[in-house]
Image 1 (cartoon, helix red, strand yellow):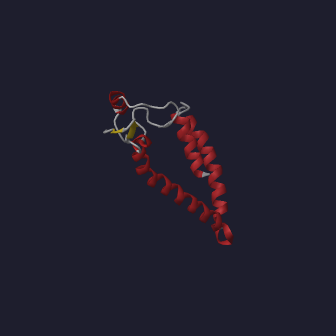
Image 2 (spheres, rainbow, N blue to C red; image 1 turned 60 degrees about the horizontal axis):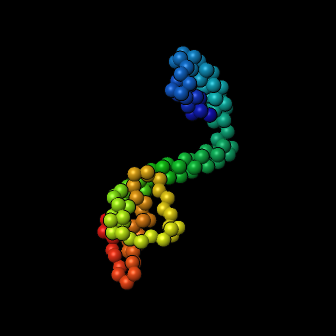
Image 3 (cartoon, rainbow, N blue to C red; image 1 turned 90 degrees about the vertical axis):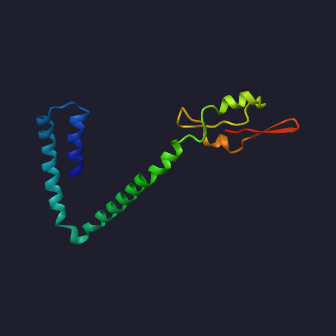
Length: 133
């Protein structure tokens, strides 16, 4: 709850455009109320109040690991697997395409999807063309 009061102050200042004194007064009232509640609950830690703190610590740990370890994965997903000239090379090679055979969804608008490079061979009649990209 104490953190919520601090976040309230930050949100009022940055997103609400509230003056520092007004935001501080409102967040200060909330902070006083939350601090009294927090101090009252601190006396009950020995009687089992440690369980919610332990659970909150576990949740926080998993959230931090998820956030920190997810960054390399997100960076790898955003890195284009091949350049945007991929479709131009297909047109140049005159590779026949069957409508409706594959759809690749991709988050970045300026990159070819990673799945498009999984099967870079297209068969035309008896000859097989290998697309190089």
